[in-house]
Image (cartoon, rainbow, N blue to C red; front, side):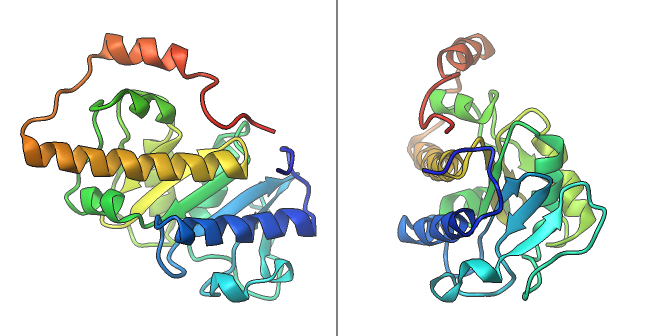
Length: 221
């Protein structure tokens, strides 16, 4: 496990690629629809647009200045979703990784324009009593970046209307872990609705959990 904060090294770039491959292996993404980025000093390293993960090599990844002042560097253009990756890293200096994917159950909820309420205590892993829904906008647009950062102002993840999901992490491992937990939560919520009306935990109950899960899960390196 690489230590965060990261530096732009071949090892970090390979870890980003490995995170993409692991998303697909775990069934939380399909093909090249997801993308992963990491903070490396004052720059963001992000997967390139449209390159299959199995053929991706560290030198193919793109680099952009996090302050937004300058062009992307690399042999391939950055992911078409680079705007919200950059916006999230800029707005959350304590987070060092962003994972975006199209998990089936998260996406199904987003198509129905539904957020995830406090149906399970693990909702607290995302910073509050909901996993919110970011409003729809064209992929790769500044409007989508604004919608995502607004929805995640006090959260570690959100659904994206008719699109998918995005999470942040203190490191790559924790971001991937959050994405997998989010898809499990989405699936459980959908199944619970098929059985009847889900019970929603109260704000007091979630506030209690928020304190208890502060150091839960994969620790930051």
